[in-house]
Amino acid sequence: MISEIRLRRARIDLVSPFRTSFGVETSRELLYVEVSGEGTTGWGECVAMSEPMYSSEYVDGCESVLRRFMLPLVNRDTTAQSFARAVSGIRGHYMAKAVLETALLDFQLRRDGVSLGTFLGATQTRVRSGVSVGIQPSIDDLLRVVQGYLDDGYQRIKLKIEPGFDIEPVRAVRTTFGAELLLQVDANSAYQLSDAEHLARLDEFDLLLIEQPLPEEQVASHAQLSKVVRTPICLDESILSADVAREALDIGACSIINIKPGRVGGFLEAKKIHDLCYERGVAVWCGGMLETGIGRAANLALAALPGFTLPGDTSASSRYFRRDVTAPFVLRDGHLDVPTGPGIGIDPDTDYLDSITSRSDKVLVCDE
Ligand code: NPG
Image 1 (cartoon, rainbow, N blue to C red):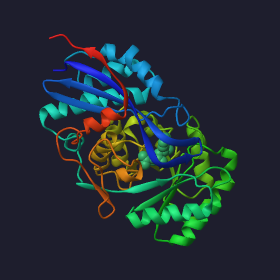
Image 2: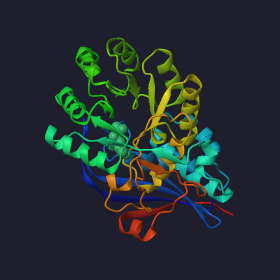
Image 3: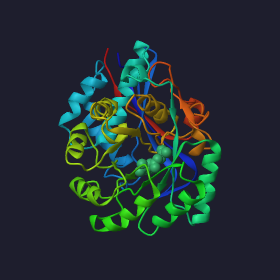
C-alpha cells in the first residue's frame, strides 16, 4: 500500500554542452517522483527539459499539472494501470503522466519482486548502445568527438543536424569512418517540406534513418517527404501514443519509430507501440532524454524487448555526467546490461542525490 509520495527537484551538470537544432543544454534540471509504502520506494524520472523547446512540456509545467490534476487522483491502492486509466481524460502532458506512472509501476514491481524487464517482456540481457552527438562548432571538432565515442565502443552514431549543418558534416563522418559505420541523423523538426530536395541529398550517405525532419504536427507531410527521400524516415516528437503511431504507419509517414516512454505517457503505452510495430515488422529503437541512472535503468528494460532491433540512445553514464545518481552504467563491448533486480533494478545513491537536490516535498500522504 502507498503511504506517501514526494516530488524531488535537483540539477546535475552535463560533462559537455549538448547542442541540438532547438538549443544548448549544459545541465539537466531534474524532477523525480518517489512513491513509498511498506518500506519500499518506487522511482520515476521526468524527461521534460527546463524549457518547452523539444516539445510543449517543460519541467515546472510537469510539476504543476502533477500537483493540481494528477496527484489528487492517487490513493493508497492506485496502481500504474489504474492511474493510466484515471488520467486518460487529461489531454497531453505525457511527460507528467509518465513520471508518476513509472514511479507507481516501480513501486508495485519492487513490492512483487518482479523486474521491469520481465514485466514488459524483455528477451535480451544486454542492449547495443548508440550515442547521440550534438551539433559541434566545426567539422574537425565533430570528427574528434565521433572518434572518441567509437574508441569507447559505441555501436552507432547519431548526428544532430540543422539547416547549415547537415550535408557536409554527414559527408565528413561517412568519409572518415567508412561505409561500415552505423550512422543516422536527427533534425528535431528543423526542416520544412519545401526542404525535401535538400534532405534527399543525404541519400548518398547510406544512413540508417532520418529522425523527425519536420514539425511534430506535420505527420502527413512526412508521408510526402518519404516519396522524395529514399532514406527511411523515423518519427520521434510526432509519436505521442500507439494511436498516432498506427496512423503514421498507415499513411507511410515513417518506417521506423523512436520510442521514448516519457514522450508517450509511460511504459504501458510504450509497450503498446512496441507491440504494434513488432506485429507489423517495423523496427523500433529506444531514445534518450539525457536521463540519469534512474530513467536510464527503466529505458534499458524497454530496450530489451524483441522489437528493439536498432541500437538506441542508451549510452553509458559517463557520456552525460561526471557522477551519476546511481551506480554508473558502463559500456562493455558496446553494450549496456539490463538491470535484473525488482522494478527498475537500481537505487539512487541518496547521499549524492541529496547533495544535488534543491527541494523535496511530500505531496501526498495516504490514510491508513
Ligand atoms: O542520449 O539521452 C541521450 C540524448 C539523446 O539526442 C538525444 N536526445 O531529440 O532525441 C532527442 C534528444 C533530446 C535531448 C531531446 C535532450 C530533448 C532534450
